[in-house]
Image 1 (spheres, helix red, strand yellow):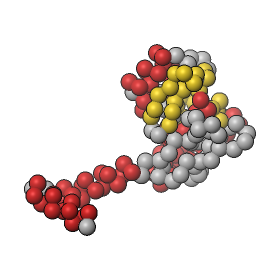
Image 2: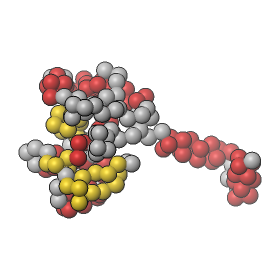
Image 3: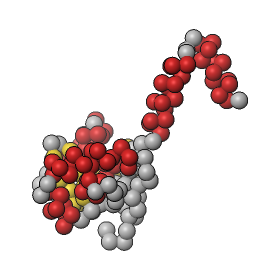
Image 4: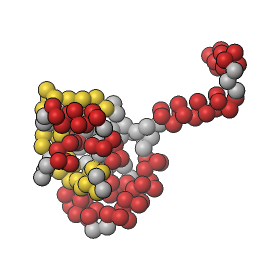
Length: 167
């Protein structure tokens, strides 16, 4: 009945079937966006300040008092200035692949990450499963990224990886 009502409304508004199909496809595509990887405490990137990965020598832990909402998650920041930078362009600072392991995606898997196993390539933050996987990833970044990019569309709509007890 809802579909009939929508069709009548579209007809009265002068919208055709093609426009209805386009709207449906656009809405369906946005509904398939994947979930951000969260740790056991429901924090992306282990609660680290994602801006600090880009601006400092090492990542800095975020504070519970300085947060922002993005991509269905609460992000933590060390300073209000970093939170404001993030909010001005979240896509620039949030990790690729919703925080999942770039190396694992190259191998057609969606797995959790360690917030201290990361790399920034061309301004993009990539997370990895562990420091040893990070080292392996660094030995062939261009090829791994090519494979990760090719595999990501199939993995993005899948549920987020589950955290474990390790970190």
